[in-house]
Image (tube, rainbow, N blue to C red; front, side):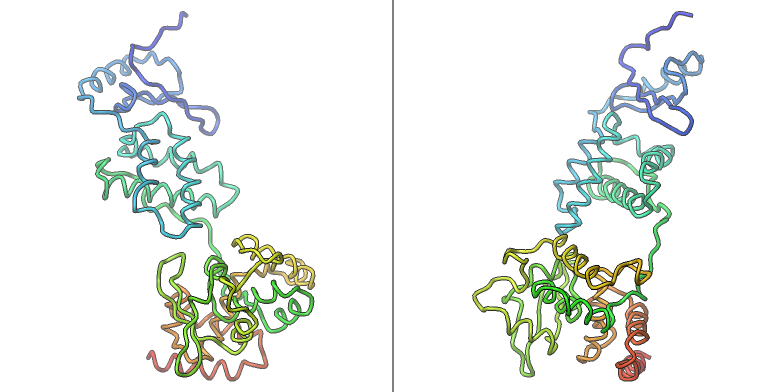
Length: 355
């Protein structure tokens, strides 16, 4: 049978699906989709009926998915934190590449949800990445719909999450801290102490400077606007953190630097601690868990409770619920027998004030 050419102007897009491929047909590039088929050249008479109806639709100026993504990336609705912005840009460009031949109006169709899920399957081996892909797509389409008015609606909201993690039981115990402090160089020890005493995320730790340190009637405090949520955090300077500050030259802009005296990146700070953690024998194989720099936030929550902050203040600073903050502090008490009684008494008092 001779193969015929499609009527002039039809836009055809091939997408891989399980067991083969599927062809999507649009009345024109940027126009409405009117047919889906496993055949590259459909012969079903209904194909031509659907084409005729689709061609009756007025042709608006094409607004393609890559343009929508570019507009979102240039908008003030992008996340504020630099690390999050980088992640959003990476996933947004992947999304734009996958749907580069599709109009933004595609996502007004219910079938688009299945197509986005098919695209996400490329990261099915990594639940975290699988979820993140869906999060970014939803954020872009919400912007295009509710803020920019580029589409009338979309069907890609509320993707079910498959990545679940509860690290509330993973904290840097005194034993863990002592092991690293015994073998690590000074620049790594300073990172660990600052993380355990302030609860700041790695992205905030690496930019901590003297401009964030303020004198108070009873000592000093750290005031910093957090990188992730843009909130102002006020943290008392504990005795251990005071030692770090007192050992820092006043003419140095940043409190924490690399082994070469250069500004740190979040990756270098986290990786440096991981390397010396392993050298101290605290490997995931030895412990049965993967201690990370961000897990120092659980230790910090306990420090801040001891320093006089309320559970609500700790939860607000950490970006946690009050219940989660209390659970983390209780976890620390279980692995820190020397401090358990005092911590649990203060925690009970803090909970009592909330009742």
